[in-house]
Image 1 (cartoon, rainbow, N blue to C red):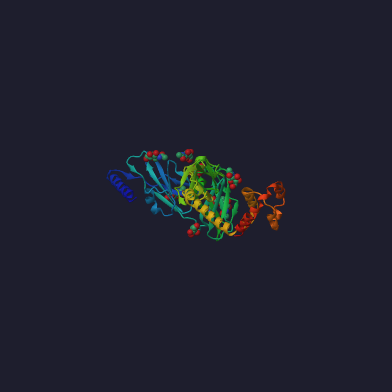
Image 2 (image 1 turned 90 degrees about the vertical axis):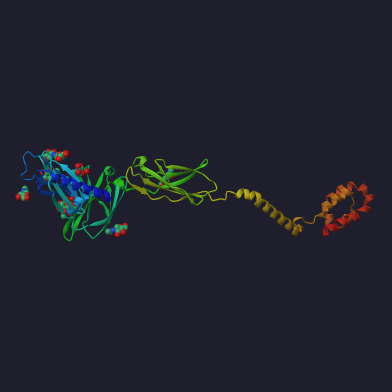
Length: 423
Ligand SMILES: *[C@@H]1O[C@H](CO)[C@@H](O)[C@H](O)[C@H]1NC(C)=O
Ligand SMILES: *[C@@H]1O[C@H](CO)[C@@H](O)[C@H](O)[C@H]1NC(C)=O
Ligand SMILES: *[C@@H]1O[C@H](CO)[C@@H](O)[C@H](O)[C@H]1NC(C)=O
Ligand SMILES: *[C@@H]1O[C@H](CO)[C@@H](O)[C@H](O)[C@H]1NC(C)=O
Ligand SMILES: *[C@@H]1O[C@H](CO)[C@@H](O)[C@H](O)[C@H]1NC(C)=O
Ligand SMILES: *[C@@H]1O[C@H](CO)[C@@H](O)[C@H](O)[C@H]1NC(C)=O
Ligand SMILES: *[C@@H]1O[C@H](CO)[C@@H](O)[C@H](O)[C@H]1NC(C)=O
Ligand SMILES: *[C@@H]1O[C@H](CO)[C@@H](O)[C@H](O)[C@H]1NC(C)=O
Ligand SMILES: *[C@@H]1O[C@H](CO)[C@@H](O)[C@H](O)[C@H]1NC(C)=O
């Protein structure tokens, strides 16, 4: 920065020396009677006169410069720095127009340039300065553009009853009033907003009994694009996880204007942000042992303007799981659980065996009896419980009554069996 500044100074100095050194070179006289007129609140008409005493053979043209500052002493400096806050034109006529705001006051300067003059340098400049408005009616202006609507908001500096808010429509060449006004805010509805290259605004009103005009120049509406908060969905697609944005209002400009900025974390680890242009989908490898959290934000590409949406709500997918858990489960935990169950069931079995296996020794006894040496009869019937259970069997036993001779052995076995089950 400083180097450029130094070099510019050096060049200026050398050039001046060169001209001073050239014999017979003289400056042209400056222009005369520079006047201005606001044709609209945004259009400044400048007129001036050709210098007097100009050689009739000498053809000249003019450089007109407008700086956004009342102070003309800083204009040279801002010229050299290529200040964006100044506009310069070169014209042959003695009049020209500027589209400009009065926000900070203006310094206007006109110089005469030789076109076909012998040995002449450009003239010193003729300057006039316009003061800024006596009162600034509003501050902190901001804008939001979407679908042919431009919402303008501001902070009023003081109470102005008849505050009016206007904008300049170049296509219609008109100053149009914004009627959709509430306190500190007005919405402009205009289908031509999208194509505007810059915006001119006027706030006017009566302050302390005097009319006041405040004009502002601002960037085109496409620099203030406001997009709706998007919605994100996460879907599984084969081995991938697909983040997809619900395109709700992304149709006003070309698809290349919208950038989808996906932010996500995987297993609580934040992954690098991913910006996708045009396509509203983004896929990542899916790790089924991880929980994913994702959100999306729409950025309006700087190729088309500027702006963004709010970030979407965060969406979650899956659960964090230990990847070694299934193996661990198989090797350690399952056998452990099985053994526990086994032990518990054994204990329970032992403690409650009377309930689980009620004392019904009879069938076994009978089968045993039958297997070992078959029938007896009167002995068993002696006990009342046994008797009831054996009622249906009696018939079978009866058919084998022929075996009765062996009954002497039965009592001993029957007694032993009953004794055992009593333990
Ligand atoms: C132009 O300015 C000169 C003096 O600078 C003055 O005598 C003359 O009347 C002015 N002419 C007009 C048309 O204003
Ligand atoms: C404000 O602008 C209007 C319309 O261009 C103009 O008639 C009026 O003189 C201006 N007032 C001030 C104080 O600049
Ligand atoms: C100069 O002014 C004349 C009339 O005043 C106009 O016809 C002409 O177009 C203008 N030329 C330029 C370059 O502005
Ligand atoms: C500025 O206004 C004057 C009349 O006041 C007019 O003759 C001239 O053509 C205007 N300049 C431009 C560039 O329109
Ligand atoms: C003004 O004159 C210069 C030569 O000194 C020339 O280069 C330039 O093109 C001229 N500009 C206009 C608008 O005629
Ligand atoms: C403008 O707004 C910002 C914050 O939004 C605030 O800090 C600043 O003071 C405001 N300026 C004026 C002049 O109100
Ligand atoms: C001023 O703006 C209008 C509308 O954008 C345009 O038609 C006109 O040419 C501009 N004039 C100047 C001198 O830049
Ligand atoms: C504000 O400007 C508009 C457009 O120039 C004008 O019609 C209106 O009368 C002005 N209002 C005040 C209070 O100056
Ligand atoms: C997108 O969002 C809108 C509003 O939130 C909803 O009505 C619409 O069904 C959604 N579309 C899809 C494809 O999810």
